Figure 1 (cartoon, rainbow, N blue to C red):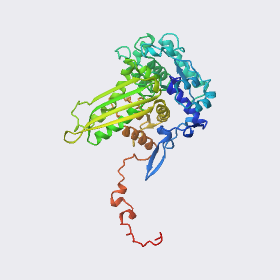
Figure 2: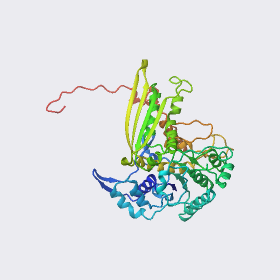
Figure 3: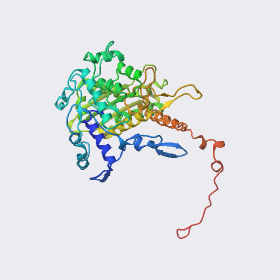
Figure 4: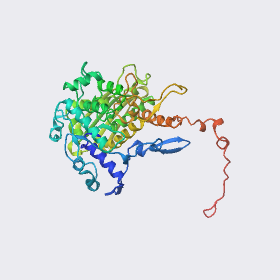
Length: 470
């Protein structure tokens, strides 16, 4: 179930599920395009089994088929999904025409609107609201989840926030700092309880995994405490799809190579509704925090380049330019110190089709959250020990998030290669395969190499060529 189902991401995700399920193709100026899941780790990437053997990621462990996903959700706009897809201006018109009959009867359930948390410029979309106080809204969401699960006879419901970015909630002692206090605060209709936190609380109450795809602090301490006590999975924050994903790779490379980044300036402009909402200062601040912290662990890992507490200059700018629509432009300048006081500057321009990059991540988050909800672990040799599930804070999905949520007191890892290796190696462990180590000693140490590789290859004979033949 998607919160913000009628937005760009929600309508594009629904369209992608249907287009792939129906095996649709459509004409473009470059030829015929077939539906695919490019950009998805689970559906379009491979994993090594060793000795140069690669298989699709989705074949490593039993995973839900995307065709079996049933979609529902909430939105503050009552627009049906076919019209929402048209409004988003993300997909080719010829594909939209094929999907319209399948999406025009899909209509979002009423949602929660609070003008204190999203930009005032969103008010013209508002026509589909849950009435009443926050306790009433909480009960309605719980009822919606139960109705959806029962009416479709589903095994599991996962709730994912892909709605507008909210401003940060203040963490207040006695209000949202514990599970008990946040429940009281919801019932008291406290102004600091955000719509996303109400959705998270409702989901956890119903035993449903909750995923936060936006940068705000939905997971205030009280929500995390509630999830831990109930043993229900939560993960987030903020889809890591374009500029930030590149940043987490590039800075990892620079620091790992002994080059010292000292300044990163990131500029973005986009024209979709996300950009419109982020044009308000409080909502932009949530995104700025999410995008700025992505390099911290890489900087802290190298005490040769950086003294304790040293930070680089990191500036993030986001501007709303309606004409460019969903096609976000991201420009970055990386300045680094090199040998003997020299400087190295890398300038990058990245055109990111926002929803087409985010949609595969939504799929991966849903599929992997469901998969890891079935994984149980115990220590080897502990025969009297019971198998236990993963920690309710699913930090294993950090690869897909800009600002990974982790259990209290555990390290935050942002380096993309480490995040991917974590998912891959845990999945391998589930079937008894060793983790990927990239040493390939069997190709480097004579006693481990095959006889053919150790002995010199036979010397080549020089042959005379006549009339083009040897």
